[in-house]
Every structure is written in C-alpha cells, then in structure tokens.
Length: 195
Image (cartoon, rainbow, N blue to C red):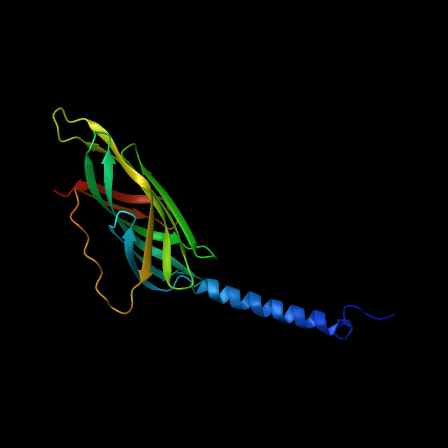
C-alpha cells in the first residue's frame, strides 16, 4: 500500500501549486508589512486643510504604529453661517493592522469628539475619513454653548521624502492636544483658545 503522506507520493502539480501558493503568501505578507513605511506623511482633508502623521517602529519590533497625527478643521456651528477653526494633535500608539488599516475614536466628556480611520496603500499613500464635533461658547452675549461639527471628511496624505519641511499649520481658533497610552486611553488633554 502506498503512503500518500510522503513527498514522493504527492503529485508534482500539487507540489508546484503549494510552492507557488506559499511564495505568493510570503510576497503578499511582505507587501502588506511594507505598506506603512517609517516616516512622516503629509496631505490635506476634503476641506483643503493640512493633515500629517508620523509612523514609527513599534516597541516590540513587530510592525509599525502611528506615534502622532494632526488634523485641521473648519467646524460648522449651530448658529447659521458660524464657523470655528480647530487644530488637533494626538500622540500615542495608534496601531496599524496587518492590512495597513487603523481607526480611533476619542470622546472628552460632552465637550469634544473626534474619530478618524485610514489605510496605507502599496504606493506610499494613506487616506481615510475623519469627523469632529466640539462644544464651544458663542461670541454673542449671553455666552452659551453650541455644537460645532464637520464630517465625515475624506483625507489623503503621502510619505515625505527625506527631511522635507512640513506644511505650516493654519491659524486656528482652538488648539486641542490629546495624549493616549498604549491601550488607546486618554492620559492627558487640553483644549484652549488660540486667539
């Protein structure tokens, strides 16, 4: 009786198929792993305002992660024809999945909410969607809190070559800084008026 588990008993076409399949899987894995290259990515949102993010090696040495991401927004407020501008910087460890995807949502009490997601592609670009909502005091007396929001907005960025200068952030009405721990929990935050 022939042993079907031995390599000699395996038909040559099947062995060749398995070798090609393994080679393709390894090539795909290398392709996906290299989609998020180390460096700074710069681009714009659907409003034409700047976005940037920095990709670093994860501390475990297995993969990459985003260490900081910055967005600028023009938020539409509840008062007709009222807008506020906002610059947000988030630092921490935003994990990049095996296929180059990432997402994060942050809510600070009832005052602030941000959400973004994205995916790196093989050509060195990254893009996704973002939304923002913030409660601000109106300029008119009496100063009441009103909701200002935008989104979802599309955004796109490309990896900068070398030490090219980053785009200067526009002047904004509010600056938001958020720091997260490795688990994605907010450990420090500030929202301040910039004017």
